[in-house]
Length: 392
Image (cartoon, rainbow, N blue to C red; front, side, top):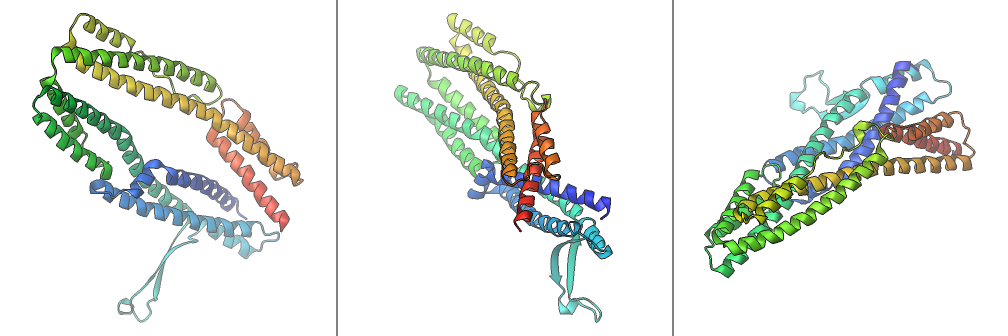
């Protein structure tokens, strides 16, 4: 067997393992599931149709690659391979061994010496490149749609809540409902578009709704009502500030636990700065009775505080997840080494280096989780294959 062909087979085996994990993750992605469930319209429908086709090609490509690897592995593992076996092995991993499609040539389009069928083939490497492009297409649509929903659905809900509050207070005070009716109509259109076309929805339409809500609120709010409402909002802001402080401490603690255990680029940094001085400035305006100046500043402060709180919690969860993932991989490795011991394979020459490599990857600092996962998977796959061969 040529070294080039054996190296390519190893690359394909590693790639197939990563492909399987990434395809499962994409299948489990909440935004991807929501796109499948929704009656999509506009640009999102077009993009997701392309992405769905790409996903089908990905799974078919995964099947074809798996078959190539299986055939090549059988040839490589022959005890006494012939020159023909070596040639076939090299063709499997380096040549155009992947059969993509067969197209029947209509009789009217054939010449006397023409073939009745046209076969489309490619190399495993070419198939892998095509799969990478298809995966990028599917991930891009799911990610962008998920980000739009994650950002705009809560924002629309917040606008709806604000609109309902202004509606109730306006009815109680007998004020004009004109701006509220227009805001209600535009918000309904925006919400409907967001549900079916997250890639085509215009965020400025929601901004226009907010503007109408603010106008309606300004039209009906008296000085006393404004002061009462803002007093409550200030209290809510102080509670939010306390949550941000607590989340900051948790984020620092999680980052410290992950520090030196993982590469710096994998550790989520704690956002710098603090929002407390800005809230103190708003408190000063309230104490001086400048209530008309507070509303927009308090809304902006609350928005930034919620964003910061979400970022702090996400960072803490990510850093905690690094440790959890490492511990899970260690547990898997221990379990499979115990399994190897039960089967009398603890010192097997093929498995021992893989186990040692996995353990070294998991217990070194900083720990590269992607490399460690590949090492554990390699040991697991080799152990499973060895047990299967022995059983036969």
